[in-house]
Image (cartoon, rainbow, N blue to C red; front, side, top):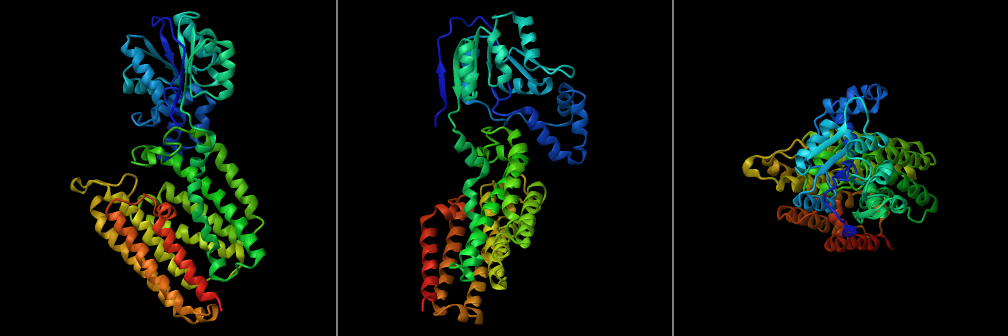
Length: 485
């Protein structure tokens, strides 16, 4: 949806335009950004944060500004509002950056845009928010002597004292409230609905991966057991909620690296579509809901669920930076879903299934890294941001990936010729047709990756690719034909 801009004609450009920064000019909160940077780089000193906060928010902001290095160049901004400011600046209007952020941060942001004639920000003694900001503006410009652009309820008194009010990405209820108490001349809105935001926060498009919990049910021929289906379905809900909580932590932790990425910069936190502070509320709620589902299932399911969550967090914070180990961990996270299916259903483990899964998911994990490496400039020896790979690693990654894909097909062929299959299927020889289908799908995925025609995530690619749908349908058909008497 295109950004919405509502305007009324303004009579004069003589009054200074005072602009809030966090949530208004920028679609993020720089204080939260600095907290994330501090925790990412100085996690062992996290105990200092409550001590600093105990000395006041102004002191807290100053210490964070001193202890962290925040790159402001990639911070998301409100594009439609920025274009408005650029036009005001072109016409010679005085624009003042007025923010509760620390002065160091404010001056960095002002230096990025180069349209502000002055910066009014928090010093180490007084937090310039709400009434304190209003007093400073009235003292400097007088009542009704300035226009003000903001986005939150904390700006309400300032809008009342301003000559003209400008609302940027403000909540709907606040818009209606300010409209009755101040002269609103411009309203800027990014036009993104709440469902679209939360769909990206929870990464709903990743939830189909958790259907792997049903693999043991299918391979164990238990699709007619309603009790088992119910337990696994409950486990699926628990896994989806748990996975979303891990995705949120990952997105917040990787926010700076994501903003420099070709596609990840559109993630909700990186793009500023959802406040970083949401993480502190959404994550524990999702984990609590996941646990509420998991406690109704066997203890082994809870063990696998916990192993998945903590491994995913370890991957986000450290393991993803270790070349090759990262792809083994990713493959393990996929395999843990299948193990969780065994845990929830109580169906016995299959060494054939686990061996097949490890090789196949390792191939897909390597394929994901190959896609990222393929887009680097090999001639300049570039490194993959946030990873332990170099552009020169492309050959070894592709070789290992193709080999693992072929090994998964080999394990499948050996399984089909095993004694276990003869007991489960009436016509086991029909299953042999699934081997060339698997080899074709894996080979085609790698071929598309070499042509730079593959999505960053191979699983997302498979869910959207029509050829993958046909191949999957044929696999299901051959399994069904092999089953019927």
